[in-house]
Image 1 (cartoon, rainbow, N blue to C red):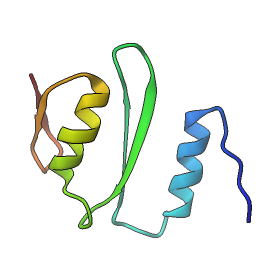
Image 2: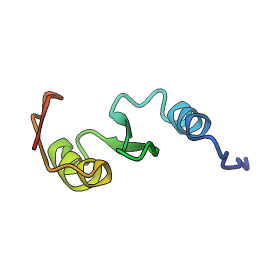
Image 3: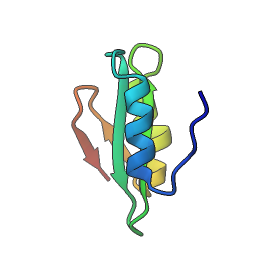
Image 4: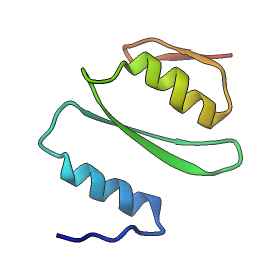
Length: 77
């Protein structure tokens, strides 16, 4: 099955989420940087370290230095 990439991030995110709907290890994070660009990150809990994903992927995209509690809370610096 061939799928096309949309110019709308929400549509792409929903399409990707639907592919992994039955996989409870799939974790999706949505965010917007300070210039208003929206993005999402998908990773698999247990295969990727949540704290490392936040510190090395999400925080740099947001332009922040942050520490993240693995329970989902974070401290922005």
